[in-house]
Length: 164
Image (tube, rainbow, N blue to C red; front, side):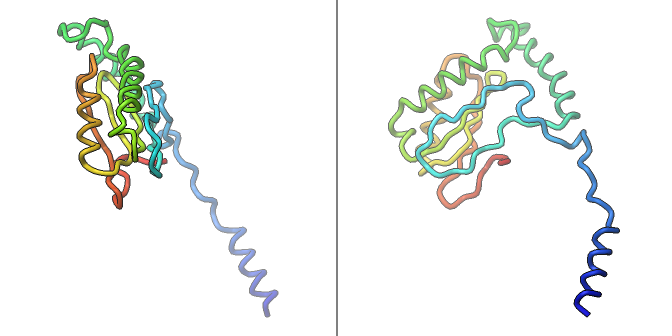
């Protein structure tokens, strides 16, 4: 009896259709624009953020917007560089150094920095709301930073950012 049931189950599994493959348009490409994505502090257990990721359709649309947004900053006289994305590497480097250099922020936090078009995203885990406010203020005070977008989780909260 067991052999017959096993044979029947094996036959059913063998005849089941395979799981559909993800469509190429739905597959995420991780950081296709090479945006700075750096862990600034690491003094608290915390789920790592996914980082910048786009489907193929989103990547194509984003590429168009990046050309437009990057250049419009310069044309409007708001950037000395002809493309707002040229600031990102040095902004990320300065943000990481500033966050690591502040004992009140670096103690008990795990914070990742993403820089994109003079915007800085802070993602990770902090001990309290005061650390989030301090981290945001430190990064906002850096030269060429236009906007800081914090997504920092307090103890007991789930991530406020996409994870892998």
